Length: 153
Image 1 (cartoon, rainbow, N blue to C red):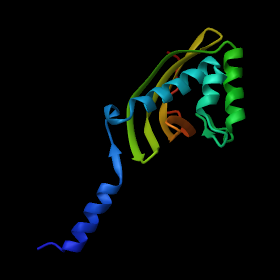
Image 2 (image 1 turned 135 degrees about the vertical axis):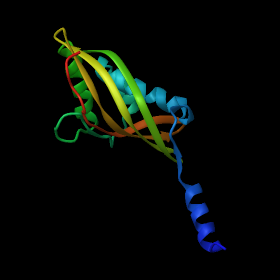
Image 3 (image 1 turned 90 degrees about the vertical axis):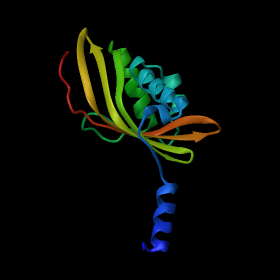
Image 4 (image 1 turned 180 degrees about the vertical axis):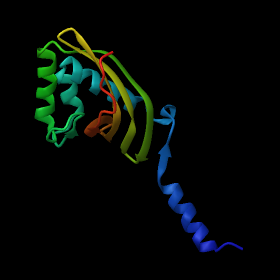
């Protein structure tokens, strides 16, 4: 006969951490906020991006560079667009989530094709993104991106 207190504790612990593995189970408004953030960055839309990033934002970019704060990230978006950069395609082929009340951590993969000076570049990598719901709105206080493949298309 199993040890009842251990079974009870294990059941309570597993119920306290909800993990969703299908993107359909993730709040569609959160996924829309993520998509808006990416598209806003690559289009230089600092109004939209700025509304999603709180003052305490911390970003770890795809390349090996210092951590970025909100101001640095907004400037990076402006500079990408000012240099003629544009996003030509964006996909998130895999997304998993840990839902912790009003905070959600997304883990996944991304594929983006950007164009700079007429030259396309395919970016593929992994992501860890944090979101928090404040006042009924999803904010994006942090991300960590890496590159797994970056070859011309």
